[in-house]
Length: 461
Image (cartoon, rainbow, N blue to C red; front, side, top):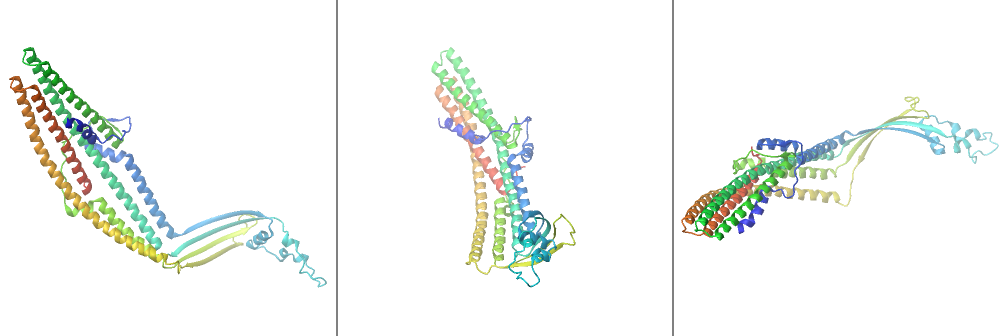
């Protein structure tokens, strides 16, 4: 039958667990309430922990960007030894120890009898090897960057806020999944109870058929038909129990702890209060879109800064000698300076990048408006669908009650020999079909309520 084939898909939809494995933990949770489950999920969810780490990374990146405007200080200590003539002379100059003898004047004939110029002084060309120890402290700081560093700092701060919005969106999703799983389990339990009652009714019918057969009013085929129907319903009951187990595994995965049992809740979720004016402020997708628009403003200012000069300052202080830290202040040195960089032409690349950023801003502005209108439309659509499901549930409840009464009536008529066992089984099948439809509609209705709650970002409890 059609409803028999569809039960597998609907039960798997309820549990949503076909690709998940629950986390193992020494603590097994029993009689867990939804409030307790949400608290555990917020505390122990591995995905939320990873998202929090991403927040911390973005926070550090924002600090890094702000740190660039303070410049940097470097300390460099060099210990060298060389017999290279150029190095030796440079070492002596650095140490303020250069003498005329280093030029080889002791080898020059100053009497005028010979020409000293062609002489290649050994002291200059083949000096003794020398040690050189130099300690240098440098400080470089940007003075003016056209606003580029300020904008980078603002962009990274905005990206940090964006990561927090991402965490909030993930939390919303986990609240949605945890809550829906609670409702799914409660709904499956209700379904299991109904199937249990149907099995009891079939067993009662089975006893009736057996008694009537003893009296010669029923045939063996009647008993076989009832037994076949009982086996079918028991198979459905078994599948429901397995899918309930899958739902518990998924809940355990969400909470990162083993859950054995929960406190059942009403099988229908409460419709949240909708205030249109609050949606724009609360919806996380709209908030992210607005923040993205602000980031495009900052990006434009970064591109504009490329048309301006950058100015930096530099200072250096140190000392050199052939012994470490020897006569430090006597042989110290300093250098200070400014550097101006200004790109005057680069093939209009900066101009094109600026225009590109402006176009990007216009695109993002339209995306923000699209997000707003799309969210409003989705909210209205979900509200309509939930109302439609509510009406359908009311109708199916009435149908289920009617189908149950019809089955009882046909069971009595069978006892009186007015109808056949096949007619009784058909009415039983109709009751099962309506029950399955009711389960499907309730599940769909709950999913839409939770989606709506997630969109308006109000939580569930």
